[in-house]
Length: 343
Image 1 (cartoon, rainbow, N blue to C red):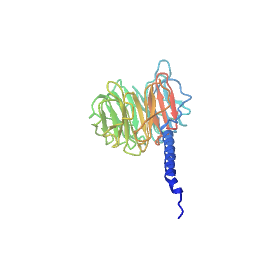
Image 2 (cartoon, helix red, strand yellow; image 1 turned 30 degrees about the horizontal axis):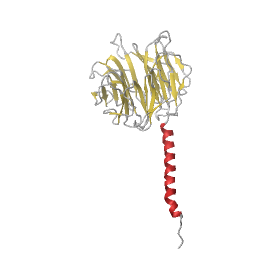
Image 3 (tube, helix red, strand yellow; image 1 turned 90 degrees about the vertical axis):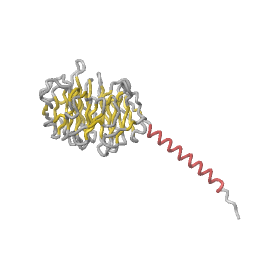
Image 4 (tube, one colour; image 1 turned 30 degrees about the vertical axis):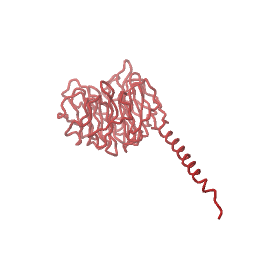
């Protein structure tokens, strides 16, 4: 019988093959984890106090709000090309130095909302071509409306009032009902799910409604300086962020539409998290921290990668497409608007 020496080489060949596969996987993993996104500053928008931004599900149609910052003019701006260019829209009865605190958009981008601090809510159902005003609560002489959010159709919309109530409308902002069961509070924000049934209002605690704002309850999240909640459009996932103030902040994930929350330890709890988005699957999470920049995750928050936004800028709000591949960020104090399509 003849001895085949190739059998002796088999373990060595298998070992070399395993090493090669391991090396390839390491390179792919490193490439996947590294940040390849390129953030671009939008042209055609003046420096300002950019507080709010909202996006259609495709990321093509956008709306942003700028408030008074010294002598700089303010206004509502629209983009129809994914934040590459913007145009200022004129709203009847509003001057050049209004306090525009926030904006919201339907999934198709046709219904958009602009929230003025004292005068209330302005709604457009034709992509900003014309606007109608709703004072929300006519009994208030002076108000401090600060955040607005709407469902994917735009039909359900909620507004938060600093030092007041949460207001909910189920008819495109035509009439509002105050959620008096929640009582008066310094609500920092309110968020509405895509279907309009789930809502979260944030103060030092998080409060949740599972029936379109009819009833509310304090959920099982810790007491923190909550700044934002975003709902996934195609799953039961939601994500919340809190700023680091007297206590730690952080990013929290919910798999039951915001009823309960779990801390994502991979996100730095010492950062001042301001705003967050989540894709339709719940896997892609993108959040911004003031003066630090943007972090994103593609694995349900198990790991986070720091983006390339410049540091030292007071980032305020983030919005994005439903698939999580497009993001747009606003900044304050002579700030601007940045966008990317490679998260």
